[in-house]
Length: 424
Ligand code: HEM
Image (cartoon, rainbow, N blue to C red):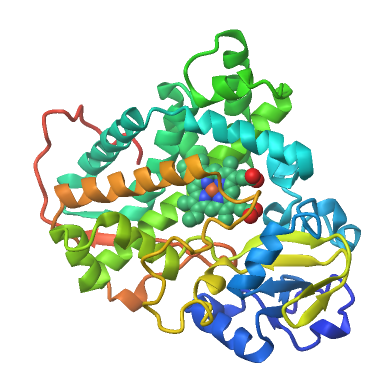
């Protein structure tokens, strides 16, 4: 069925491609190369409902957009099409109108500087040794829950669970609530009838956490954020905790999934992980360069007309950060192997709104521990189906696997395991 056209199309966007068209997910990198060939570093594109936007594909242009926060601003209130797009537009949650409305994500200037700084300080207070131990312990429990069976679906039963469990611990969510929190994330991610209930559960859990740390502060991230001298209101505290949990959930889970997928389909990566020929951190970095979970990030809005690449973007237009495309910009990487040893990838974005440094370290610790525990326990992992048959999430924004079915030699339970399948 033809979808309704939500807004009048400007001349600049006539004939533009629709992001997320059926064959787009098979190989987004190919779609980005074609766009670059047709338009250069900034391409007009359409989102669901033929909503026009500009996709930044060039590395240099993306640095410009993410650095100049006055011209390429973060508040969705600047979007000139905002009033014309209905409240039930399915992309609102990712484009600024979702439940994160009051969060630091869409603030600008001094308010953003203060709130992002407070989140960074609170995350930086996590003891790295204890965090690593938590990652290993949770990963071992998860691995143990399917070790005897000789097969597992590693997205649902491993990669999507580990980040929520360890970040739940770091934030200060009581252990007995982790299980329900994991279920709420699973429901929310599935996007079906239970998605809204899942979202409400996450909100209620964070409200409870806020009440707890106001009354009895501890040594966790929520308590540090509550105590920060910027003085967040209860609702701001709740929203910023939700963002911290959400921002690290899918990104980290898909990074882990994409890395395991490479490991079981690409001999060079398998050697890297199993035989230590390439440091794990280097192999994970290669995944950020070439298969980043964060493909496109929405967004920025122009505060006045802006010259960008070969185009002039009118004031109030939506600019999408083409993070994956910029990582493969031929100006930066004339050959596929160029720059790959560096950290110049834009998977975490760039500039004042980019992923906070302490969050990047936590994500790397989670993914590294998750993969090391898995390989230690199951050195002979095999993908169940041919690599081209795995299904990718039908998302414009993220690249992650719908499922990752593997087999391995079954192992008997270890003594540290209490039994049961805690998260399934
Ligand atoms: C424990 C894991 C993580 C945590 C706690 C976390 C936390 C955050 C937070 C709080 C923000 C908001 C920053 C702001 O608005 O100032 C953010 C933004 C972001 N994060 Fe992360 N993150 C995690 C993992 C990741 C990973 C693995 C990736 C990708 C590889 C990623 C990519 C991004 C991107 C692209 C943004 C938006 C940047 C922008 O608007 O320019 N994050 N993250």
